[in-house]
Length: 417
Image (tube, rainbow, N blue to C red; front, side, top):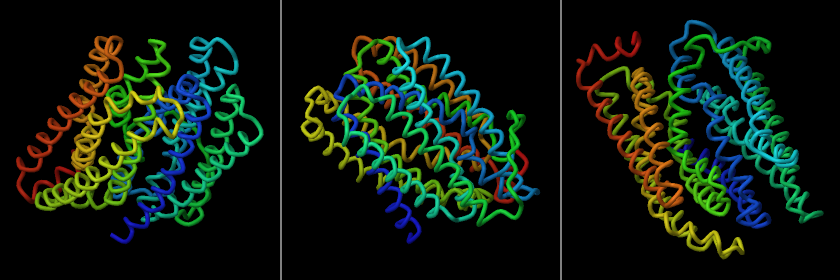
């Protein structure tokens, strides 16, 4: 509990700084011009799982059972993720030329998308395995402080909203620097060999890389952010900006959920080696996430009511229409995150992948039908409905896996499945 408290303090300080940066940009750019930031954040959500390659979910599990040294595993893990990152960057550059009409907008789109997407290159799971989560959170907080200073200095000398591309470049450079710093910090404290970068395409599951989780992550992004891309395609920048900003508030709750999963990741993997351990872990973890998420959701809903006045742009007031739906969704999603992690610990990636693809396809289809006419409100309802059904299916699958096997069999099933 002490570790959780310290890490929550660090991560929430980081999140509040990130949120303040987003609010500052929204206030300075206005509801229409802020849409470039919103688009970059939405694209980044799709880019992150592609670059992460499932590392945040499976690296700790694979490291616990590996016969190789974690040093070699981490080096191989990073080389494969960096290879994909370079490929994704090329695709974004090509796409920006098709989507934008001038070089400044293209730079804004690519830099902001990569800035958000490079979260997938963080060596977060390495620190989790080494029980050094606090150090990674300190470095993450330092990055946010640096970002705030950079943006503050930029707008201290200019109020020109055309400088969006410069903001994107500064944020991207800062993120790359701190990724290198995090890797150097972990390697200096926990590795026994010299680091050698070996770029290689992802070849197989293992070394913390998991294709099932990667594809499922992209599919889940369709569920959570597909509506934002549809809003962008419909050329509705004000509604896109409002919906994106409401999501940034929900992201503060996701941060709490993510920290709980990070700190319990290894414990869940070890608890799922027995039937009774898996059940106790699920009940405790899911209950804790539900209570914490519900408390934070009330605060998020309250904040949304006053946000348009702070931003000095009443066009953001549309957020209050769908904020209750998003608050309900984020509480349910916290429980779902616990259920999913227990399923992954029991090697249920195939089921997780299939369910994510089905959910992503249905979300996009429903979004294409309803979002153009009913806007972000329809997107929020689709998100709540599809996510709830997916979480229910994951829960039923988890109960089946746990209860269908005798106590001695669960450990061997976990090891060989």
